[in-house]
Length: 233
Length: 233
DNA sequence: ACCTGAACACCGTTCAAGT
DNA sequence: ACCTGAACACCGTTCAAGT
Image (tube, rainbow over all chains, first blue to last red; front, side, top):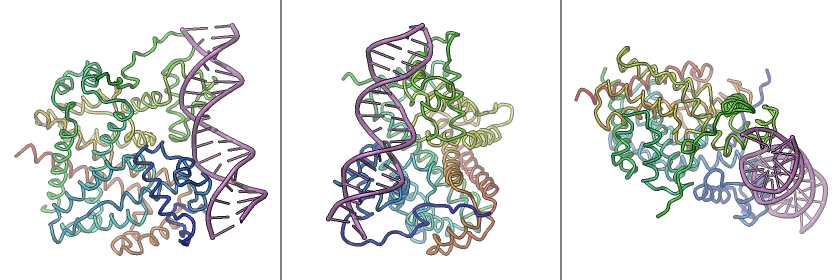
């Protein structure tokens, strides 16, 4: 009966921000820098401590544990989304801009892709973003739960496209990227799949960024078309 | 000029499978069991060694490092997808079944959500699944690159919906889940967002599984509708 | 109120040594 | 050909002790 409480940074009251010493914001900012530069594995309490010229364990005064620190960093990234006012630009345009800015935020902070499947986004900035997104689809004309369904359909699409993109970039960063090497490797891997072999020879692997941008747009338009159809029937 | 080679288990020739001693399959199987039971963090070379009653370092004879082991486990999960023959059931039905089986596979192996943003899916089973998916959209009538775009639109949708679902489940597993606790917590968090507050009172948090199933279907139908529209214009 | 270092229980991985 | 244990360089976190 007495279930343990669901705990997360967001359930706890934040420590008062007194002026002396370090601050939570400062720590989170430094953590994000480290994450951007070195990825999720690059962030350790010791390294972060050193970066702030403090003992590794000093951080535990400001943050209960590393997971909470990640929750805080994660929420910052949600704060980078821009969700236009649908009354001004129309819902389709607003949805497009939102989708693109989401993709950009994830590409800017590749570690966020690792957190998507691990931490629910319950921080204040994430909630605010979610609220503004709902507004987009509410003005589009969706009613009741359909507002939520529509919202998560497009966010799901963005997550889903950007995630493998990030995975790919990560793999490329760890090694050197050489289009020719890659091509031969894929050709070997795709030996048994004629259809796939065919497209290894396209420009897909010379200019993956452009191909992905086109692919993103194709899918986004389709998703929005599909949602629009729900409105008119 | 001499870029380092892109390395991954799949570029390397597998060791011959001689009968004595342990085998790669056995190790991967045990790894997946551990992953399913304890999650990504639960898998350590030492624990896995113990499970196979072997020294932790014995495993390095079969596998170059932990990352390769994860690549192998990841590919197994891709092997669990069922992609029906579109000639038999029609492309929409085939796409639906594929989407549902993908979602199921991810929910069965929650650790796969953590790998989606980290490892490109280049294993043989992943490639085979990708090939069969392409066939679905090729028979639907897409041409050239559009086949790939359509394919990744629906896979992206499935990733994107299932990922936060897995994240949520993970968070719930770590603590006890109590709908009432959760509700009060969310009510507090959503204090500033009236629209959101409203739906905390729905059945959404009493029976999240059903709500998610409905949401999944809503989005899937929309995505397929949107793709169908590309075919007819 | 804030910060520290030592200590604990873990990691992945290398390598010389064994059979 | 296969397996081992010791060793190295890391982790996150606790806690008594300092200012």
